[in-house]
Image 1 (spheres, chains in turn yellow, blue):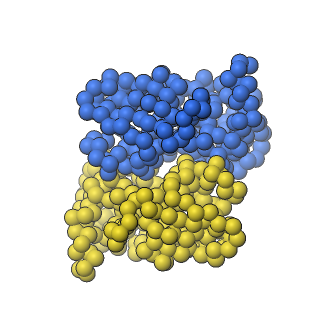
Image 2 (cartoon, helix red, strand yellow):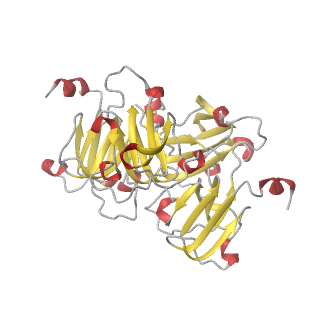
Image 3 (cartoon, one colour):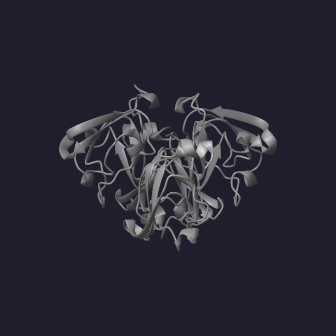
Amino acid sequence: MNTQQMEQMGQFRITVWEEENFQGKRCEFMLECQNIMERGFNKIRSIKVENGPWVGYEYPEFQGQQFILEKGDYPRYEAWSGNSGYRTEHMLSFRPINPNPRRTNNHSDSKVTLYECEDFQGRKFEMCDDYPSLQAMGWCSKEVPSIKVNSGAWVAYQFPGYRGYQYILERDRHQGEYRNYNEYSTQAHTNQVQSIRRIQH
Amino acid sequence: MNTQQMEQMGQFRITVWEEENFQGKRCEFMLECQNIMERGFNKIRSIKVENGPWVGYEYPEFQGQQFILEKGDYPRYEAWSGNSGYRTEHMLSFRPINPNPRRTNNHSDSKVTLYECEDFQGRKFEMCDDYPSLQAMGWCSKEVPSIKVNSGAWVAYQFPGYRGYQYILERDRHQGEYRNYNEYSTQAHTNQVQSIRRIQH
């Protein structure tokens, strides 16, 4: 356990169950889990987040689709999954998100920059607030080719109103630099981003 | 057409298609639609909102499940539906939402009050911002028994992170008073509310 993990103990807490509605085999975590199958789980079908936020992943080792998990009750897969057209229903690894790891800024200082082209080219737009519709804000496309996270942690979504594929974007990962949509997620299918919001503690 | 509807003309615009990915029969609206089947549609399977926000309903005459529709592209049902466990996949009526009909206040003045019990009893909490997790903010339950909208328009959601059943709550409807969960929607199945956000123009 390294120093950062020591600091996290108690700050983050999540409980996962093998069956829906908090039934069957359960396991509680205060640190990241690289592969829930190593704990004898077949699937995760319900979740309670006592302290968050966390990010869940479709596959082991933090690969595949991403799911933001904030404090609250998730009695079945559809409660956290962003894209119900996609039927695999796996969530096999998860980790805490530290929106402000150095505690030098607070939620209201979160900032992200969207770019019109890949590699931070073209027109850009700086944002410090949540936008359920980027197009309503004036962004002319349904696509966002590259994103720089200046501070904090954010979730970008494929559709308006915080729906569809989710991408967790953090200042502390990739140095906050996401040069093209393949960097949004290990399995991003599209560069469509139509809504974006801050991740709050 | 009444005066309010005259004012709305051009301010709101939505296009609906009978097939996914903006294919097949289409129809454009600048005013509410009480029953899309009267236009010869079997279903709505994709939507573009050019100017919003709108609210869609599962059944004709603005009944049943509600769906917030902000500016942007919705290529299939899952892009707007909140509860994928529920498979009817109907959206048969829709209407514009006027977050600030009298234009005397702006988005930042939106205010809502949550109550611990029905009929605005018990402890209360006033909010002016978006909350992806009410529990993270200090609300001790996953339920919200009654809600008063002091100004603006809001969406309340069953699950954290703006997921699950959606309830559109407006100052201009019910005088902003929702005394119990049956008033959140004509077919509310639960008083679970775990996230809430403002509706923006």
